[in-house]
Amino acid sequence: MAGRSSTSFGIGAAITVLAVGFVGFFIGFAIFFGKYSDSQRNLRQSQTDQAEVVKADERNRDDVRGLIDEAKKSGNKSLVGFLLESQELLMQKVTGARKDKPSDLVSKLANVPGTDSAPLLSVVNTGLAQISSLTKQLEQAEAARAGAVEDQKAEVARVNDIQAKHQGTIDALNKEIDGLKGEIASYRKGTDDYKGKVDAQLDGVRQAAAETEKRLKDQLDKLTEEKLIVENQLAVLRGQKNQGIVQAGDEAALVDGEILSIAGSDSQVYISIGKKNNVVLGMTFAVYSNAAALRPDANGNTPKGKATIEVVNISDTTSVCRITSEVRGNPVVKGDVIANAVYDPSKVYKFVVFGNFDANRDGLATPLERTDIQALIESWGGKVIDALGGDTDFLVLGQRPILPPRPDAAAPLEVVQEFIRRQRELDRYDELYRQAASTSVPIINENRLYTLIGKTPSRVAR
Image (tube, rainbow, N blue to C red; front, side, top):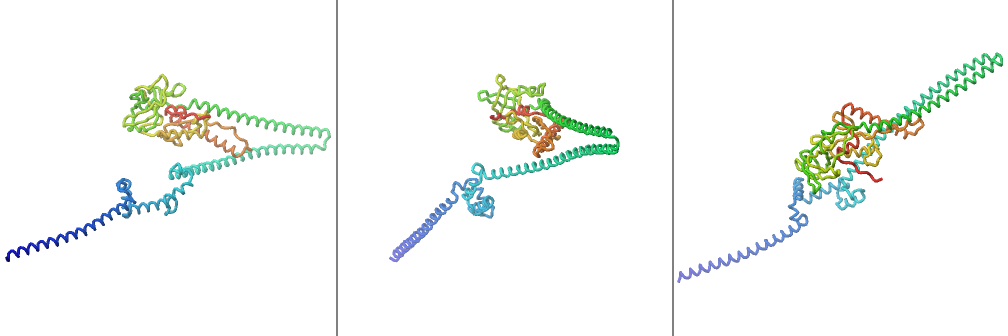
């Protein structure tokens, strides 16, 4: 009996312990589940708040990760704080107000000409370049004006010297006349017939002197006019002669590569030079049957290529070109050679460009179109320098400037200044030609440059 009671008590105690444990577990689970629900709710709210700043897929972008890294490097800042500080610095640089927003910047840029079609930095750089160019032109104009003033002073001094000499001659004649008058006075006591004879002789001397002075002045004016006419004709003849003598040497050594194969259906060819030879997209070449075809004829003229090609695709050792022009009946074939005057795989050619050019093909050569020729050379990798030196590869000479008749002393300052400017251009043209001839620098004219490059500017509409 006592054993059964002990067993029943033990079972009851165990059941009671289990019941108390289950109740405790349930209470603990309820508390844990409540905290878990709060944590999940806080997590979803945090994710929502974070998505308003940066979404998950945006956070993994390289540029966003880069900004986050920069924010950490800048004092372990948050991404938003770093962007706000960067925006304030940018607005301080651009608008002068740190608190401006991007919308404020857009509104202010609406009043700035040119920013609607080009980036702000490009507009600023363009404006600075224009200011620099105008400043340089102003300095050059001021220097030219000062030179013209000095030349005018020299011309005025020369005229004054001529007038002084002329006055000296008149004074000498007056002195001689005064001497004759003295002699007449000394003989006035003589007979009236002798006085009349002396008076008649004096009148004859005066008339002869006046006639002589007028005749000499007429001859001087005529000789001056003839001299100006001859100088103008000489300038024209020199210009015409120059077109015949502006020639370069043998261009057979300027062969840059050859045609490897033809893709006739696409009007494309493959050439033997590529990236390793410094070929760039858009480069053009003239095509010749062989190297000998590059040599000038008896008159110094380089034959025009049978075709022109333009690079459209480049590999390491070869390039693909499209045929841009071709002579009918003389197609491009495998083995043809190609040449470009300003291309060299190992160096940059240096050019001196001077004279009058007809870059717009309107039939009128002007000194202003020299810049178009320089831009054409530079666009293909050549370098334009101002003076001949030991490293100059070509002298490109346009038509020789023509000097107008010398203005007289009463001419306006602008006329004198223009005459002096043209005189200096003419002297520099002749000096460049003499230097190039004496130092064996090749001289090429405008047409030969177009032929060797394989590119001719289009004719402007008139």
